[in-house]
Length: 293
Image (tube, rainbow, N blue to C red; front, side, top):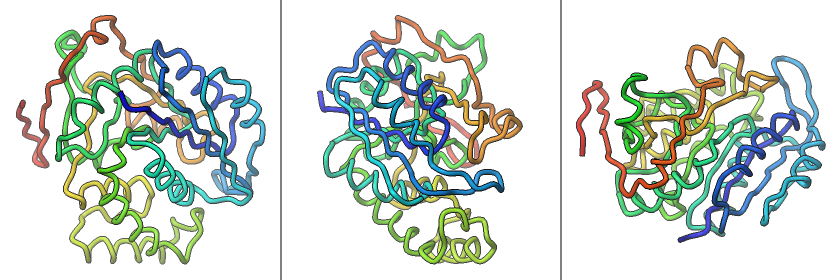
């Protein structure tokens, strides 16, 4: 089994990071799992107010009980786009598979095991560019028992990207597209991306390459890049994670998480899921039809 790296982005909120780390530490199998903290530095703008990096995140990380862990700190503020620009090339060079995880995401105690099963099963499937452990339940409550082994494959443009698993070799063509996006937004800092001129530049570029995803955000850029590389995103029907990002977050609000249905969701777990040998795929097409394979 290949080693798995889990990269966690952080800036402020060490108490939130601790909850994230505690949830990972509670997993039943962390053998061959390396944990990386990527702590942004300098000053950013949080909901209109200037905020400085909280070095308390390093204390929380250093106190965590993981066997193998690495901390990477930036002396200046990079924002998400800049953080991605240093995380992905490093992970792709050092590991065959890895996770990029926001500090405000909580994983279930079986999630590492489930994600490793999925990474193994779909490693050679050319359709799959990334795997998401699910931030909400995608079936009716009375269908939970029938869906422990079910995953959905789709463009993924309506799904949160705050936790995703990747294969380094599949990310090579994806990263070429993402690098083009990075060149387009080069004139602006991360905190300036909402400006009209930045949005217009990204929209013009996206349309020029034939993409209908014209938003300026780094998450949209990653989904766009996966699609432009000819792949889709996969998500588990039952959520193995949830988001608590409205608690002092950069972008999230309680209302936003409620609308998305991904905040503070009960994480679904069963001992039976640890015995799953093969997951079944439901393909979701742009018009909403689904078919099972």
